[in-house]
Image (cartoon, rainbow, N blue to C red; front, side, top):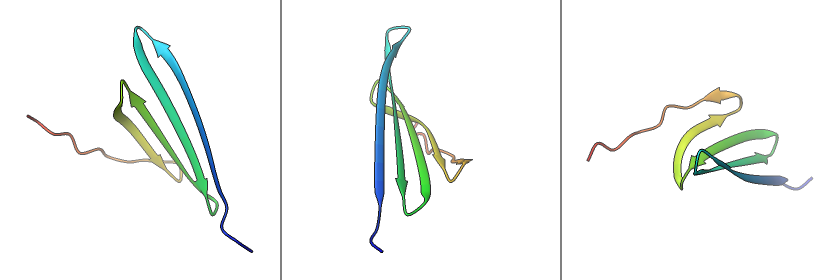
Length: 57
């Protein structure tokens, strides 16, 4: 059986900011990314929230 990949994307405006949620399921593994105005704010892989590296410029 071949590989399977499903991608679902939704966007909404919250307090003047564009919130985009992208859910990817590939070979039974789920990945959810949440972006605010184009910046990654949250990443969840297989139900576990991942730490994000933040650049301090």
